[in-house]
Each structure stands twice: as structure tokens, then as C-alpha cells.
Length: 209
Image (tube, rainbow, N blue to C red; front, top):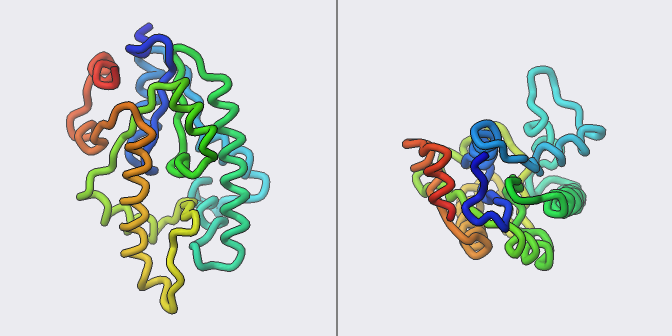
């Protein structure tokens, strides 16, 4: 089995939803026997008791519908519930992580308590898969068409017309997250480049060394 270049630490992938965290986690599991702690999937499993997908709807889309947009009634309480569950799941994943393991975090991992983020960075080799700037308009379009649960953490501005405000607010959210992910990570890789020219498993591991 190919293990993490730093065999003292498991790997941890961070970055926005859709950038490839789960794809590369699954590839490393398939090709090199890594054990994956999928935080998104575990949160979805635990929330499935309160969210029932419509026919043909994925669970993550149903969760996005449940959370709603940042200006909708009850959003703050649902966001808090989601973050509390994410903290619980991430702590469990970190506790169980060992050499040859991957913690596949959610896009909102950066909003978890500081002590948890410090512990994640201390125990894991944190890899930030960065979303290229050129793909951010497409991300907004996808978010509007098929909302996923997005944590704003109070960053959405008060506005008379929140829908009109959304594009600029979302762009600012991505910039804020970009900085936070980069500060948390030990190494940053371009998610777009990895998608355009996929490296071998061994090459990917060499890049995160």
C-alpha cells in the first residue's frame, strides 16, 4: 500500500464543495488502500431523519433545500444545527484517523472551533484543493440552480434585495474561504489543474509531501 509521504500523519482534504476532495479521496482509497472518513456523507446520514429527498433528488440537494438561503426564515438556527453536527462528525473523524487514512472535510470546516482546526492541522497533512478563479461564476450558477447547504457564518450582508446582492456576496464568501483554507493547509494544489491533467496516485502523493 502507498501511504502518506509523511507516514506520521493522515491526510486531510479541504476546499469548496465540488473541487475534487471526494474524488481524490476515493481514488486514493481504490488505488492505494487509504481509509476515508467522509464528513459530508456522515452529516447527510445523520440529517436524513429530518430531510426526505424529493423523487430524483439527491440527499445533498435536499439538505440545501432544508438549510435554505441566508435570508430565509429559520436559516440561522438550521445553520447552527448543521455546524454543531459537522463539529461532532469532524472530531470523530479526527479521533479515528491514523496513518493511511484521509479526513475528507466539508466546505465549511473553516468555521469550526479553533481548537479543532488546530488539532486537525497538528495531526494531519492538510491539503487545500483550490477552486480556480475562472470556475467561480459556474459555482454561483450551480448554487442558484441546485443549492447545497452553504454556511455563511454571518457574512451575508443585510439587503433590501438579497437575490440581487447574492452574486457579489457569494464572490466575497469564496475569497474569504480561500484565505482561510490556505492558512489551514500545509500544501495547496490547484483543483482545476488536477482535473484537467489527473496525476497518478504516486505523483499526487509526491505533491502533498
